[in-house]
Amino acid sequence: MPDPSEGLVYAYHPRLGGAGVRLALEGEALEWLVGPREGRLRLADIARLTLRFQPAKFASASFEMEILGRDGSRLVAASASRTSLTAVRDQGQDYARFVRALHGALADACVPVECRGGYGRARWGLMVALGAAAALGLLVVVGFALWQGQWSTAGLIALLSAIVGWPTAETLVRNRPLRYQLAALPAHLLPG
Figure 1 (cartoon, helix red, strand yellow):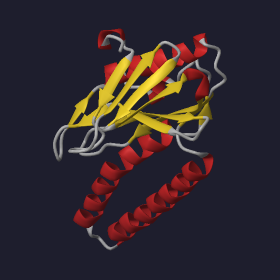
Figure 2 (figure 1 turned 30 degrees about the vertical axis):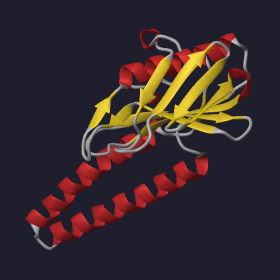
Figure 3 (figure 1 turned 60 degrees about the horizontal axis):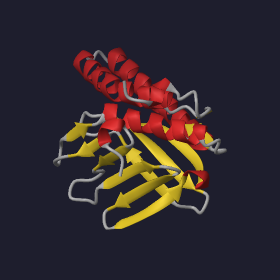
Figure 4 (figure 1 turned 135 degrees about the vertical axis):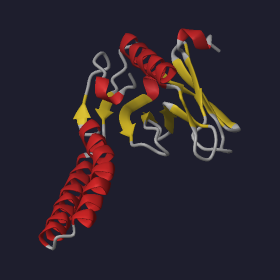
């Protein structure tokens, strides 16, 4: 296996107590280990890469790369490892190095890969519509509370709306559907 300092090996734990994931670029293939299962996916057999931003879970946002093989196989790498019930270890620099190395290896091998960013159009559109409806509803509630002279209630609802609205808006902005080229990774979908 390659030396991790070269940025060609990446390992993380997606769930506390769950199986770890290890991905390694080895020549013309991506070797993977997920718990007790292991395999080898030739670079030429990678059909699609999808980069996403994952909203905060216990105050720690992360990034994710989904790798789909032409045979239907699916591998996922994320920029954070779960270390306890409420804590995660940020591995953003190592994750970004591995993502760039994989994209570079695919470009060098001239593999025709579909590169996507964010959510699918239908999911993203539904999230935007529901978010806008929720924001409008909360605005009406705050307005009604102000009209009734309930200043503290209006302030509390407005504060809680901002606390929930900010990460929701960031998720929608970062995960807008897009296509990109192997040599032009979208910076907003990588840590940094």
